[in-house]
Structures are given as C-alpha cells and as structure tokens.
Image (cartoon, helix red, strand yellow):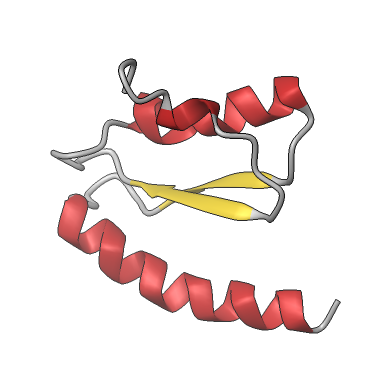
Length: 78
C-alpha cells in the first residue's frame, strides 16, 4: 500500500469499497483507508460498504455483485 499509494488517489467519480470482518485478504482498516483520505482531500464521494461479520474475501465479492447493481441503477436515475 505504501509503495504504490493506492489509497491516495483523488477520485472524480463515486466509488465503493466492500469489506467484511472475516476477509483474509483486505482488512477493514485497509478497505476504509481511501474513504478517510477522500474526506480530507474533498474528492468524489466514497463509501465503505460492510458485507458482514462472517464475510470472507469471496463472500464480500459476492455481496458486492448484488449491491453494485442497485447502486449503479441509482446513479443512472439521478
């Protein structure tokens, strides 16, 4: 993370970050790091979406697939 500074990108479009408490690949603190950075930098809206206590990396991905469709549709209706 530090070497490529991926959490320090300044977004111009809304983004979502999905995480779960049992995710073995992306810890919740890492998933929410870009959210806090964007709040300070006043970039586009960023949202951290919690997939649940038992959501591991695969379950978080599946959860995001269902949630993203609803989110994308809401962006089209604005």
